[in-house]
Length: 297
Image 1: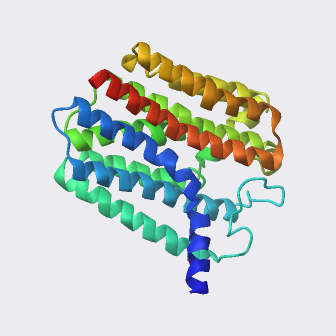
Image 2: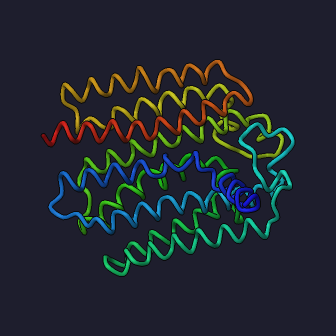
Protein backbone atom coordinates (compact mmCIF):
# COMPACT_ATOMS: atom_id res chain seq x y z
CA UNK A 1 0.00 0.00 0.00
CA UNK A 2 2.82 2.40 0.87
CA UNK A 3 4.46 1.61 -2.50
CA UNK A 4 1.26 2.39 -4.38
CA UNK A 5 0.82 5.66 -2.49
CA UNK A 6 4.41 6.65 -3.21
CA UNK A 7 3.99 5.70 -6.88
CA UNK A 8 0.85 7.79 -7.24
CA UNK A 9 2.40 10.79 -5.51
CA UNK A 10 5.44 10.57 -7.75
CA UNK A 11 3.40 10.54 -10.95
CA UNK A 12 1.08 13.24 -9.63
CA UNK A 13 4.20 15.39 -9.27
CA UNK A 14 5.31 14.57 -12.80
CA UNK A 15 1.82 15.24 -14.18
CA UNK A 16 1.60 18.57 -12.27
CA UNK A 17 -2.08 18.17 -11.51
CA UNK A 18 -2.39 21.85 -10.57
CA UNK A 19 -1.94 22.74 -14.28
CA UNK A 20 -4.89 20.67 -15.51
CA UNK A 21 -7.73 23.15 -14.85
CA UNK A 22 -6.12 25.56 -17.31
CA UNK A 23 -6.20 22.83 -19.98
CA UNK A 24 -9.76 21.81 -19.23
CA UNK A 25 -11.09 25.39 -19.13
CA UNK A 26 -11.11 26.23 -22.88
CA UNK A 27 -12.62 22.87 -23.83
CA UNK A 28 -15.36 23.09 -21.20
CA UNK A 29 -16.14 26.63 -22.31
CA UNK A 30 -16.57 25.74 -25.98
CA UNK A 31 -18.54 22.61 -25.03
CA UNK A 32 -21.14 24.81 -23.31
CA UNK A 33 -21.14 27.22 -26.26
CA UNK A 34 -21.82 24.44 -28.77
CA UNK A 35 -24.56 22.96 -26.58
CA UNK A 36 -26.35 26.29 -26.25
CA UNK A 37 -25.84 27.90 -29.64
CA UNK A 38 -25.14 25.16 -32.18
CA UNK A 39 -27.64 22.96 -33.97
CA UNK A 40 -25.34 19.94 -33.53
CA UNK A 41 -23.45 18.78 -30.45
CA UNK A 42 -21.80 15.37 -30.19
CA UNK A 43 -21.36 14.73 -26.47
CA UNK A 44 -18.99 11.79 -26.93
CA UNK A 45 -16.68 13.83 -29.17
CA UNK A 46 -16.78 16.66 -26.63
CA UNK A 47 -15.72 14.29 -23.84
CA UNK A 48 -12.92 12.81 -25.98
CA UNK A 49 -11.65 16.31 -26.83
CA UNK A 50 -11.48 16.99 -23.09
CA UNK A 51 -9.48 13.76 -22.65
CA UNK A 52 -7.11 14.85 -25.44
CA UNK A 53 -6.62 18.28 -23.84
CA UNK A 54 -5.86 16.85 -20.40
CA UNK A 55 -3.55 14.07 -21.60
CA UNK A 56 -1.72 16.47 -23.93
CA UNK A 57 -1.06 18.73 -20.93
CA UNK A 58 0.16 15.82 -18.83
CA UNK A 59 2.35 14.54 -21.67
CA UNK A 60 3.80 18.01 -22.11
CA UNK A 61 4.63 18.19 -18.40
CA UNK A 62 6.44 14.84 -18.53
CA UNK A 63 8.30 15.84 -21.70
CA UNK A 64 9.33 19.24 -20.32
CA UNK A 65 10.74 17.65 -17.16
CA UNK A 66 12.67 15.11 -19.19
CA UNK A 67 14.03 17.54 -21.78
CA UNK A 68 14.88 20.32 -19.33
CA UNK A 69 16.74 17.77 -17.21
CA UNK A 70 18.71 16.49 -20.18
CA UNK A 71 19.59 19.99 -21.34
CA UNK A 72 20.66 21.10 -17.85
CA UNK A 73 18.01 23.81 -17.57
CA UNK A 74 16.94 22.67 -14.09
CA UNK A 75 19.64 24.05 -11.82
CA UNK A 76 20.09 24.45 -8.07
CA UNK A 77 18.68 27.96 -8.44
CA UNK A 78 15.29 26.66 -9.52
CA UNK A 79 12.44 28.31 -7.59
CA UNK A 80 9.53 26.50 -9.21
CA UNK A 81 7.56 23.50 -8.10
CA UNK A 82 9.66 20.42 -7.35
CA UNK A 83 10.60 18.26 -10.31
CA UNK A 84 11.09 14.60 -9.30
CA UNK A 85 13.55 13.82 -12.10
CA UNK A 86 15.98 16.65 -11.41
CA UNK A 87 15.78 15.82 -7.67
CA UNK A 88 16.87 12.25 -8.35
CA UNK A 89 13.62 10.80 -7.00
CA UNK A 90 12.82 9.03 -10.28
CA UNK A 91 14.73 7.64 -13.25
CA UNK A 92 14.47 8.74 -16.87
CA UNK A 93 13.05 5.31 -17.67
CA UNK A 94 10.09 5.88 -15.36
CA UNK A 95 9.44 9.32 -16.86
CA UNK A 96 9.60 7.87 -20.38
CA UNK A 97 7.15 5.16 -19.35
CA UNK A 98 4.66 7.69 -18.01
CA UNK A 99 5.10 9.92 -21.05
CA UNK A 100 4.41 7.05 -23.49
CA UNK A 101 1.36 5.96 -21.50
CA UNK A 102 -0.26 9.40 -21.60
CA UNK A 103 0.65 9.85 -25.27
CA UNK A 104 -1.09 6.55 -26.00
CA UNK A 105 -4.26 7.68 -24.20
CA UNK A 106 -4.16 11.01 -26.06
CA UNK A 107 -3.75 9.32 -29.44
CA UNK A 108 -6.45 6.73 -28.75
CA UNK A 109 -9.01 9.42 -27.86
CA UNK A 110 -7.90 11.65 -30.72
CA UNK A 111 -7.98 8.91 -33.36
CA UNK A 112 -11.52 7.99 -32.40
CA UNK A 113 -12.60 11.57 -33.07
CA UNK A 114 -10.63 11.68 -36.33
CA UNK A 115 -12.19 8.42 -37.52
CA UNK A 116 -15.68 9.80 -36.99
CA UNK A 117 -15.10 13.35 -38.24
CA UNK A 118 -12.47 14.56 -40.70
CA UNK A 119 -8.80 13.88 -41.45
CA UNK A 120 -7.90 17.53 -40.83
CA UNK A 121 -8.10 16.78 -37.10
CA UNK A 122 -5.37 14.19 -37.61
CA UNK A 123 -3.10 16.96 -38.88
CA UNK A 124 -3.97 19.03 -35.82
CA UNK A 125 -3.23 16.06 -33.57
CA UNK A 126 0.17 15.54 -35.17
CA UNK A 127 0.97 19.23 -34.62
CA UNK A 128 -0.03 18.88 -30.95
CA UNK A 129 2.21 15.81 -30.57
CA UNK A 130 5.13 17.65 -32.19
CA UNK A 131 4.46 20.66 -29.97
CA UNK A 132 4.74 18.52 -26.85
CA UNK A 133 8.38 17.82 -27.69
CA UNK A 134 9.22 20.99 -29.64
CA UNK A 135 8.44 23.24 -26.68
CA UNK A 136 11.57 22.17 -24.78
CA UNK A 137 13.38 19.90 -27.23
CA UNK A 138 14.42 19.44 -30.83
CA UNK A 139 16.83 21.53 -32.89
CA UNK A 140 14.97 24.77 -32.10
CA UNK A 141 13.23 24.57 -28.67
CA UNK A 142 10.40 27.08 -28.61
CA UNK A 143 10.79 27.82 -24.91
CA UNK A 144 14.42 28.87 -25.28
CA UNK A 145 13.88 31.14 -28.28
CA UNK A 146 11.14 33.43 -27.00
CA UNK A 147 8.34 31.51 -28.74
CA UNK A 148 6.83 29.86 -25.68
CA UNK A 149 4.16 32.55 -25.41
CA UNK A 150 3.10 31.98 -29.03
CA UNK A 151 2.98 28.22 -28.45
CA UNK A 152 0.78 28.66 -25.37
CA UNK A 153 -1.59 31.02 -27.22
CA UNK A 154 -1.90 28.47 -30.00
CA UNK A 155 -2.10 25.20 -28.07
CA UNK A 156 -3.99 26.40 -24.98
CA UNK A 157 -6.41 28.72 -26.73
CA UNK A 158 -6.90 28.52 -30.47
CA UNK A 159 -6.39 24.76 -31.00
CA UNK A 160 -8.56 23.44 -28.14
CA UNK A 161 -11.39 25.91 -28.69
CA UNK A 162 -11.56 26.04 -32.49
CA UNK A 163 -11.01 22.36 -33.17
CA UNK A 164 -13.15 21.13 -30.29
CA UNK A 165 -15.96 23.18 -31.80
CA UNK A 166 -15.30 21.57 -35.19
CA UNK A 167 -15.08 18.05 -33.72
CA UNK A 168 -18.31 18.48 -31.76
CA UNK A 169 -20.42 20.24 -34.41
CA UNK A 170 -18.83 19.33 -37.74
CA UNK A 171 -18.86 23.04 -38.60
CA UNK A 172 -16.23 25.76 -38.72
CA UNK A 173 -16.57 28.23 -35.84
CA UNK A 174 -18.17 31.63 -35.93
CA UNK A 175 -16.39 34.83 -34.88
CA UNK A 176 -17.51 34.49 -31.25
CA UNK A 177 -15.66 31.17 -30.98
CA UNK A 178 -12.51 32.79 -32.36
CA UNK A 179 -12.78 35.57 -29.79
CA UNK A 180 -13.14 32.99 -27.02
CA UNK A 181 -10.17 31.03 -28.38
CA UNK A 182 -7.80 33.99 -28.31
CA UNK A 183 -9.11 35.14 -24.92
CA UNK A 184 -8.43 31.76 -23.30
CA UNK A 185 -5.04 31.56 -24.99
CA UNK A 186 -3.98 34.95 -23.63
CA UNK A 187 -5.16 34.00 -20.14
CA UNK A 188 -2.97 30.88 -20.31
CA UNK A 189 -0.01 32.90 -21.59
CA UNK A 190 -0.01 34.59 -18.19
CA UNK A 191 0.83 31.27 -16.54
CA UNK A 192 4.02 31.20 -18.61
CA UNK A 193 4.66 34.88 -17.88
CA UNK A 194 4.68 34.22 -14.12
CA UNK A 195 6.86 31.14 -14.60
CA UNK A 196 9.43 33.05 -16.65
CA UNK A 197 9.26 36.12 -14.42
CA UNK A 198 10.06 33.94 -11.40
CA UNK A 199 12.88 32.09 -13.21
CA UNK A 200 14.46 35.15 -14.83
CA UNK A 201 17.88 34.82 -13.16
CA UNK A 202 18.09 31.08 -13.78
CA UNK A 203 17.05 31.50 -17.42
CA UNK A 204 19.72 34.16 -17.95
CA UNK A 205 22.29 31.83 -16.41
CA UNK A 206 21.32 28.85 -18.62
CA UNK A 207 20.89 30.91 -21.80
CA UNK A 208 17.13 30.37 -22.06
CA UNK A 209 15.89 33.26 -24.19
CA UNK A 210 12.33 33.69 -22.95
CA UNK A 211 10.33 36.77 -23.84
CA UNK A 212 11.11 38.26 -20.43
CA UNK A 213 14.84 37.58 -20.82
CA UNK A 214 14.72 39.28 -24.22
CA UNK A 215 12.81 42.36 -23.09
CA UNK A 216 13.86 42.59 -19.44
CA UNK A 217 12.30 41.49 -16.17
CA UNK A 218 10.19 44.64 -15.86
CA UNK A 219 8.42 43.61 -19.05
CA UNK A 220 6.82 40.64 -17.24
CA UNK A 221 4.18 42.50 -15.19
CA UNK A 222 3.30 44.72 -18.17
CA UNK A 223 2.78 41.67 -20.37
CA UNK A 224 0.74 40.00 -17.64
CA UNK A 225 -1.55 43.02 -17.31
CA UNK A 226 -1.99 43.34 -21.09
CA UNK A 227 -2.85 39.66 -21.59
CA UNK A 228 -5.24 39.67 -18.65
CA UNK A 229 -7.17 42.75 -19.76
CA UNK A 230 -7.36 41.59 -23.37
CA UNK A 231 -8.63 38.18 -22.29
CA UNK A 232 -11.60 39.90 -20.63
CA UNK A 233 -12.26 42.41 -23.43
CA UNK A 234 -12.33 39.68 -26.09
CA UNK A 235 -15.51 38.27 -24.55
CA UNK A 236 -17.33 41.38 -25.80
CA UNK A 237 -19.54 39.43 -28.29
CA UNK A 238 -21.26 37.99 -25.19
CA UNK A 239 -21.51 41.30 -23.35
CA UNK A 240 -24.78 42.63 -21.96
CA UNK A 241 -25.33 44.73 -18.85
CA UNK A 242 -25.32 41.71 -16.48
CA UNK A 243 -22.35 40.22 -18.36
CA UNK A 244 -20.33 43.42 -18.03
CA UNK A 245 -20.96 43.31 -14.29
CA UNK A 246 -19.64 39.72 -14.26
CA UNK A 247 -16.53 40.86 -16.12
CA UNK A 248 -15.97 43.66 -13.62
CA UNK A 249 -16.33 41.21 -10.74
CA UNK A 250 -13.77 38.88 -12.30
CA UNK A 251 -11.42 41.81 -12.91
CA UNK A 252 -11.67 43.23 -9.41
CA UNK A 253 -11.93 40.04 -7.34
CA UNK A 254 -9.77 37.59 -9.30
CA UNK A 255 -7.40 39.18 -11.80
CA UNK A 256 -6.26 42.45 -10.21
CA UNK A 257 -5.47 40.96 -6.75
CA UNK A 258 -3.20 38.37 -8.40
CA UNK A 259 -1.58 41.06 -10.56
CA UNK A 260 -0.79 43.11 -7.45
CA UNK A 261 0.75 40.02 -5.85
CA UNK A 262 2.94 39.58 -8.94
CA UNK A 263 4.26 43.12 -8.47
CA UNK A 264 5.29 42.60 -4.86
CA UNK A 265 6.26 38.91 -4.58
CA UNK A 266 9.67 37.39 -5.32
CA UNK A 267 11.27 33.96 -5.55
CA UNK A 268 9.35 30.95 -4.27
CA UNK A 269 6.43 33.17 -3.25
CA UNK A 270 5.63 33.51 -6.94
CA UNK A 271 4.61 29.84 -7.02
CA UNK A 272 1.39 30.87 -5.27
CA UNK A 273 0.91 33.59 -7.90
CA UNK A 274 1.44 30.96 -10.60
CA UNK A 275 -1.20 28.70 -9.06
CA UNK A 276 -3.62 31.63 -8.68
CA UNK A 277 -3.08 32.55 -12.33
CA UNK A 278 -3.96 29.00 -13.37
CA UNK A 279 -7.06 29.25 -11.18
CA UNK A 280 -7.98 32.50 -12.93
CA UNK A 281 -7.92 30.78 -16.31
CA UNK A 282 -10.57 28.42 -15.01
CA UNK A 283 -12.53 31.28 -13.42
CA UNK A 284 -12.42 33.15 -16.73
CA UNK A 285 -14.02 30.15 -18.42
CA UNK A 286 -16.72 30.09 -15.73
CA UNK A 287 -17.30 33.79 -16.36
CA UNK A 288 -17.71 33.01 -20.05
CA UNK A 289 -20.14 30.18 -19.33
CA UNK A 290 -22.28 32.48 -17.17
CA UNK A 291 -22.24 35.09 -19.93
CA UNK A 292 -23.47 32.43 -22.39
CA UNK A 293 -26.27 31.38 -20.07
CA UNK A 294 -27.35 35.02 -19.63
CA UNK A 295 -27.35 35.49 -23.40
CA UNK A 296 -29.21 32.23 -24.00
CA UNK A 297 -31.98 32.77 -21.47
